[in-house]
Length: 478
Image (cartoon, rainbow, N blue to C red):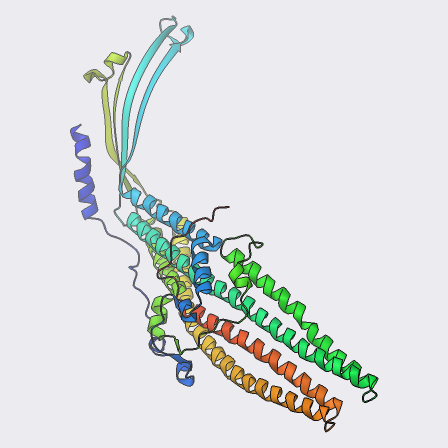
């Protein structure tokens, strides 16, 4: 028993003498250019380098959109998968931390054995009973830091899983907003097409009356009918895309596709932030983007695994101890005559053949180098995505402003052409051309409104916000 009592003291002495092999992790520095403002910010008056709010979707001032995104953050299945992965990573970390504690095993047995006559020196068969209780313990001395590095790797995996959960939230919030905006945008384009069909139907009816009165030709009637049919052909496509977006929206919020959201189904105009968009700067972006954090934490974990592989090149030391009690009768089990113990170190070392251990070390270093490259790539990708989103948003706004003017001008031109045709000053061909221009301008304006909404959402997604105050995920009850 005194020998077993010396186990903690011996372990403490060895731990104090231990060293942690392998590289110590330091967060890699990013280029100085990543810390400043975005290049596109200075080229557009529609954005500003102010702080992006956590719940960026509230900038739309749309209660329906707020509810849908909150619903998606709670019930979306991709977010639930990411949350389960985080729980698994936390459990794996607990498992690695358990390696610092001794492993123990308690056993008890009761056996009855019979010795055959041919095996007995007395040539007489006999039977015996034996009862035993034992306690075994082993403790691995982390002499070279292999256990410590394994815990550090598990911590990095846990942090990376948490960042991946946040990344899933960013993506789902943006895609929910996009599905809603797409449904609304297609409804708006459908409404424009239906209104244009009404105007073109009036033109066709007038053309037929004029033809019947002898003022027009059959060709004029056919041209007006062609123009009407071309516009009518656009409506089913808009309606189909609108319904497809509503199905996607239901799935994003954890519902079956058939459970279309009633409020979203009634939406008829694309959501849009009219104010100047806050986009922050490079420093804020790198601190906010979860994918960058995930890449950095993965790099930390893989760096720690280099230490785990390095520790395998050195001896492994375990302290083993056991005590036992036994006897041929239950009442004799715990008597002094039945006590036994064992104590001693177990040293193992894969030496001199360390080919496998050194190959694993090279693999771990290669994985770490790849993780560093992915971290650098994630930083560059984040900056690129924001610059691209800013450029496309500015282009979408400029295009929209031009198309607003085109719609207004084409509407005035169509009115004038109608008046001149009624008074006989213009030919029917000029009226048809004016009607076509107005229809095209109205359709292009509606499409541009949808493109502006989509560009805004792409920009918010690139900025990486929306995860900071996310609610807990739950499974939606069937």
